[in-house]
Image 1 (cartoon, rainbow, N blue to C red):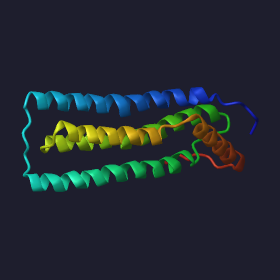
Image 2 (tube, helix red, strand yellow):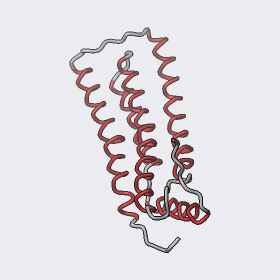
Image 3 (cartoon, rainbow, N blue to C red):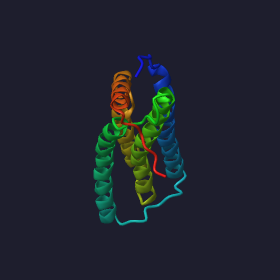
Image 4 (cartoon, one colour):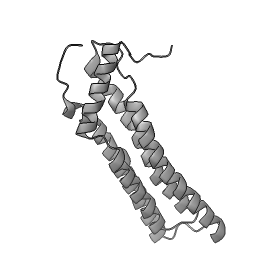
Length: 170
């Protein structure tokens, strides 16, 4: 493959904006909804305290497992072939990078959704804050950085050089 310099900033900009939307704006919006509902006393617990505690701990474990699983899946997704043809290398790379980023971001955003579900089942604002914090910490580990993008570019160039391309299912 001919040596062309891929603009890493162009590669990262859209995925990072989607990350801000899905992993900062959505959890903050959910947090605002929870705050409003709690202040207006609209929601009341629908579970007895013992059942709530069990569900709380289950969702905490699921949230942490979700963050770890997202990190593992991120490695698998980004270091698999994303390029369809050598001619469309940069466009395929940008599309694949965005697609894979959105998958990872959605998994991390689910952590905040777990907190919202827990609130609906009888939780409080502080519990929602905990899940939003876990979500934002996971986002910091998942979001793509400049060095990571360069490694992905190198891996994709290697795959193209080996003749390994993304094959679509028909």
